[in-house]
Image (cartoon, rainbow, N blue to C red; front, side):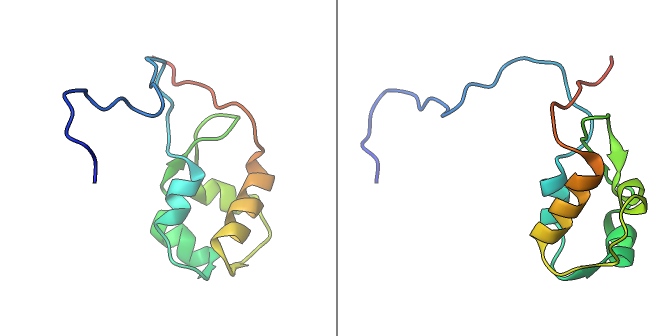
Length: 96
């Protein structure tokens, strides 16, 4: 248990006031699913979900169009396959 003090708890990481980023992280979308999954089931359940990519926001369905896999045995397999299709790098901020 914690000690009773008058000090307010500080966040572990300071959140800055930056520009918003459109879409959700790919890992967040993947965490909403149970594994294993067929690509068609992912498309049906989360195909319209927008995720953040280095090239801007994309739907999960469009990412699945770029991969040859039809079955993902684990969440990690899905994430690594999707990341190989979309790349890694800085995510652009949303245009306002």
